[in-house]
Length: 83
Length: 265
Image (cartoon, rainbow over all chains, first blue to last red; front, side, top):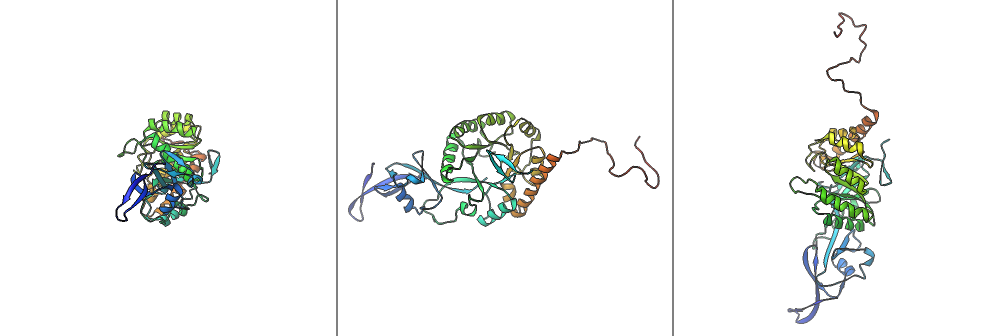
């Protein structure tokens, strides 16, 4: 797993972060982070969502064991009204 | 008499409805209840990151335990995007295989790109999806989609959301006559008579969204559509009388009229 090292200037400490592409937008989160932790952080735990990581579906049962790395492309989707 | 079967599942209602363009989920639910539909379509979209994660979810208003959810690929312009979308939908719906494939070719007309649609169909059928496919009213493409393994072929009546009704009943009749899988009109229905005509032509069902959602009273229109689909189906099964061009025949007895008797020459 790759994690970028960035300096938290305000705190003056060294911190590990991961920058993901989430739904087409960059998102920087503390590293290391699993998909389950990201989903929780976004408030989606227990919600009806589906996740694709780098073009592959990640089954709900595997969120916990899925470690996220810098540059991972994630899509998180829901059902919405449509014809 | 009114039940029909898609991919080995039997449904009571031949009216399938979309869930888009309603004011809120309460109106969505009320309209769908009034329509009597068993199968309801949904779209798959990215979550709004950073917005309230607790906002109501469509699938809470329309629980999959009660309705057969038909995820669509609306907005997809390539086979790859459509396939990815339906893989996500299958995960979202706990392995549910029934899906509505539509691959669009043009943002103004929303005409289907039938070449990409055929490509996506091959992949989806191989991956075990039960594909109900939106297509043009071209009988040859409809046949090819059926031969690739689609569980239903769904030609347009006219452009999506246009409400222009059935523009080419002749092509639909050819598609219906040749089909070995259910044929549903999908898109273009504007009002109840359009749905009835589709069913009188011999369609197995009708899928609509805007005709209900954009009516002044969507719930009343949903009820009208339910009746129209049932009436059209019964008329189809009953077999209409032959049309007699320029040749009237009275319904009442010709004899026993008081006054002067008139007879055709």
